[in-house]
Image (cartoon, rainbow over all chains, first blue to last red; front, side, top):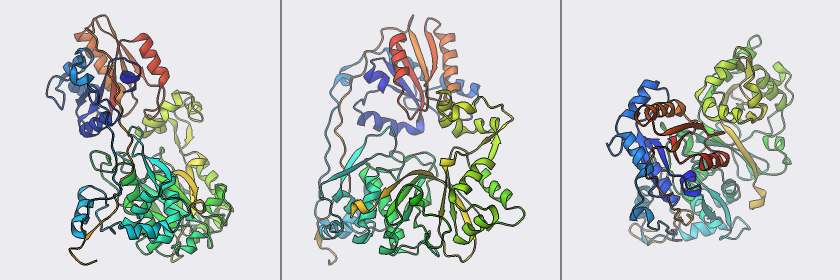
Length: 438
Length: 99
């Protein structure tokens, strides 16, 4: 769109057909509804040159006309009156919905994809007012912008809109500062990525106890009101404040992700951890309350404890199972955290992180051949971005670290019923102060 | 509230931005003698696809000069240097393969 609209060079954009609704929506919302687009079959990835040539020789997947005819006419057919018509329009969001029965309103929320298809609490004025009493911020203060992916437009929201979604999630009013911190971060828990990523939130500081959050037995499961509804609120507010999370339109995760229901939200077990809390690692004081947000949560691996003789190999086996484009979050039961101290002399999280960085390696040729490395790292390397650019000079048979140190994270949670521990593939988005939202 | 009571609730949606019209560039009369940039967005083997398109032009429209041009970095980043190059040296562009 930039080349055509901003640089005035006639352009055709080629997409695969599965993305037809998305691409039509994106050009409309960017004020270019008549942008020339042509469609080939999905997928491109993994096809031979001959198969892709057949796409080019074949029909456009939406019009049925020859694909290359669509391309050539897209560059040469004169603009018509519809192309020249002003496509500007304004949109507004009424503060309230039309008065109706509870049954009809519940149905309306589902029909509009405003829920996660579990029952919601209807955001009545009374309930929203109760939520708003738990912050000093004005209800009409615009506190953030959010969008499901880079190519969509940002939507904005105020404190009251966040309260509405917090009510819907079933959150208690006292949870509101934590939910506001999540919302104000601008980090969406409902990215539209085809990779079906979910989100994760680690809560630190005194707020864990104030809200009676669970950092012990069952902390990551459906066993605590605050853990469950704070995470759910992040998901619902992301859906609605960014302008939707609708499959095929604003959500494209091919398989979807069950983690998205509550966005893997838990409190770190600071009291039983041998290390400093996660938020302190990131520059906060122990007595500050924070939410640390992660996106791209897709995969998990696990094992039990650290065996005396082969623990290093066992850990690295888990790590090797992940795509090197992701980041890693070690989620350790306190039993295993102490085993890492005992077995590896990792008396800080940073020492464990450095060890994983140094020892989790793969051949350079294998590293560069990963599809996600090709999509997201190789272009940055050829652009000269370090440390990736230097890696291009590494001989193909030499070993490369799979993960940078700042792509490896460690947190402690669990009730010590056993030493099971997990690694999540998830990317750190930042740690945000809850106290500012009280 | 009793079943059947009519109640008023808040709208949960955020505030969308105004959509502002952006005009399309004037189209070309012909591609003959023109330079068409085939812009590789470097996603999921789009380079292989666009090189096949380059071959198609060579075989079917030899009067069209094509330039295979990968963007400088990842598709999530704007690339004004490439857009400026196309504006300076090209007449048209095909960008692929988006998703």
